[in-house]
Amino acid sequence: MLEQQRTIKKSVSITGLGLHTGTKCKMTFKPAPEGAGINFVRTDLGGNPTIPALAEYVIDISRGTTLGIGEAKVHTVEHVLAAIMGLQIDNITIELEGIEPPVGDGSAMPYVEKLLEAGFVVQEAPKDYLIIDETVMYHNEDEQVDIVALPLDGYRITVMVDYQNPALGSQHSGLFDLEKEFVEEFAPARTFCFLSEVELLADQGLIKGGNLDNAVVIVDHDLNEQGLDKLSKKLGLKQKIKVGESGFLNDKSLRYRNEPVRHKLLDMIGDLALIGAPIKAQILAARPGHKANVEFAKKIRKLYQQKKLVRKYQHVKKEGVVLDIEAIHKILPHRYPFLLVDKITELELDKKVVGIKSVTANEPFFQGHFPGQPIMPGVLIIEAMAQTGGILLLNSVENSEDKLVLFMQIRNAKFRKQVVPGDQLRIEAEFVSQKRNIVIFKAEAFVNNDIVCEAELMAGVVDRLNKQPE
Image (tube, rainbow, N blue to C red; front, top):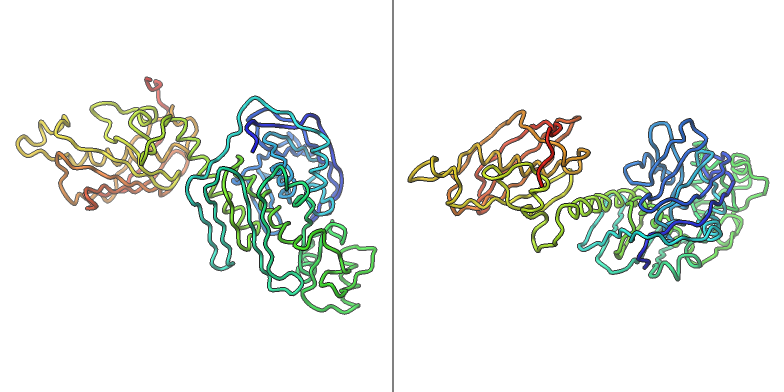
């Protein structure tokens, strides 16, 4: 796999109709500086709004992947993104004079050819790979979809589909080397759908740019000549259509024996671009679709954001530690004798954090609480819970290093057991909600798996008047 970021040498354009909207669109690929990522720009709209190709901007996955910010949208981006990721391009601007990229032949190949024509420029910055170091799973019981990411020093994808259709059957395919296999083996795989889907989509006013030259239609039920003529008129086709004997409308020949599953793999490459970084992992997927792909991409992107954020503060990797005391010093403004969390052992951004506070006989508050019978004050246990919970705000506010988290309310606080010298507090805080700069989270403190304190905390995030000392 490539080690440095790259973009394209020159601008190139492609023009055509969008698959679903049927509207004309000119799409131009342009070079972008290192670190810019992949961005769509609607040059036909006022202000030229930019839509980053990131999972949080997905607004629809019903028939393809649609991105949007406000009124600006770009439909069916997966094939464009697959071409970009397949060619290992990190930074690129995609300008569109229209709402949907040209469909071409229904594959990623037209975009690949244009990008190859543009050529590549190796940039100075290293690629920001997300290295999957533990198994990540997605499961949808209702749709029988499973996607798994496994640790691997490389990039591989294996996909299996089973539509219980004689013409399609069970199919599987795998990509093991982007540089050697993508352009020849996967980029030309065309989109496909079932005849029953074509009728439904046509009735919904979709696939206005679809025809038998940019899609493979699988026959899943009989349709008489009158019905075929009616469908042909709905789609605005000039050519006559027939059911044929191969199982594909008009006996369309496939580019590969398993072209449909190869296209599913192509879609997945495109949808996983929404992670926002190239990944090193082995991806195994059973019966994936855009909905599952995007949900999985969101899950992986959250992991990427967390790892990137942790790297900002934690420079030395330590077994069993996400953030050590030095990293905590960079995040929280508290100092001795009021810093009451020693390390963070688990972190799921915007969800959960686990912190550790070792309670020693040297704690200054034991001198007066109480002489001869030292007990950690309950209010300080609450404070330790609040400080641990403050770590959850790393990704929920901008410029978190310049903010303070101030108590507003403590609800339902209960103290179950005493905490004494020699105890180790394990504090678990879970994100509940956030409205503007007001955050609510639940926290529990344990000693030896016994709960000693619990509470629901509300805090306000305010600007720090003086920057935190180094």
